[in-house]
Image 1 (cartoon, protein in one colour):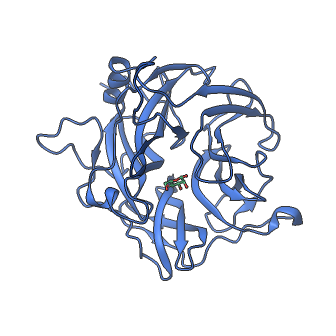
Image 2 (cartoon, protein in one colour):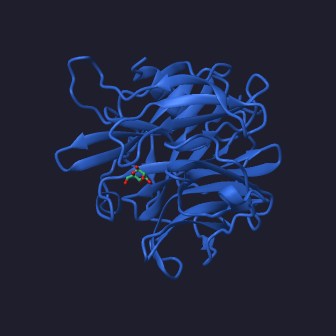
Length: 336
Ligand code: BMA
C-alpha cells in the first residue's frame, strides 16, 4: 500500500542519500564524505560553493558559483549522474541575450535553479550597477537565455516558486544595500510574465526569541535558500539566518512553513537552527562559519530531502533530512 505523501513533488528514487548516522538525533545530518565539491575541481577555481542542483533527464544538472583565482565571481554549468560527483564546465556560462543594455556580464553569484513550465530558470545575484536579481532560462544547461533583471539594485537571494500561485509567478527576495548588508527581510513578489514584478508582500524579518533577547542565529538578516517545496501543510522553505558575533557574521540554516495560497503568511518558523557551521570545512575557509543552502532534491515516495549548501564560501556540502521530521520540528519549535 502506498503511504500518503507529504511532498507534492515527483518521485525521485535516485536522489543522493545517506541514512542518519547511528547515535545522531539531529533533524538534518551531513554527508560523511563532505565536501561533495572541492574548491579546485576545475582549473582556475578559487572556490566552488553556494550552488544549485536540479533533477535533469534522470540524472542531475546545475549552475555553480565559481570564484576564480582572480577572485571574479562566475557561474558555471555542470552535470552529475549520481548527485555526489560533479563535472563542471571549465568555461563560465556565456548568457545569450538580445538586449545590449544587460548583455555585459559583470559578476554573478549564489544561483538558484527552478524547473517551471518545462524550462529551467536560473536566478542569481547579478551585478548591474549594483547587485540585483538576474534571471535566465535554459532547456539543456548549455544555452542560457538571459532575461530582464527582476528588480532594481539592491537585492539578493531571489528564489522562484516552482509553480504559479493564484495565476501569477512568484518569487522571494531580500532587498539590501551595497555592501555586506547588516540587515535584511524576506519579501514575496508576483509577476504575470517573469519580467514585471509587483504586489510586494513582507514575509519575515530577522528575529530573536523574545524582545529581551539580544542575539539569535537569525537576528541580523535572513534570506531564502532552495526553491520552496510544496507540501500538504504549506510551502516548506529552508532559509539562512545571520548572527553578528564579535568575530564576524555566522550563517546558519533554519526552515519556515508558508501558507500555500498566501506564501507571505508564515505558519511556523524554527526557533532553533537546523544546521550551523561546526565542521572544519564549514568553520575554516575564505569566509569562516558559513552554511549557505541554495538547492534541494526531494523524493515524494520516501519523504527524503537532500540539501546542497555552501561551506565557508569555499566548498559545497550535502545534508539530508526527512520532510515529516522537519515539519514536526517546525510545529514543535516554532517562533510563530
Ligand atoms: C553573503 C553572500 C553569500 C556569502 C555570505 C557569506 O552576503 O555574499 O554569497 O556566502 O555572504 O560570506
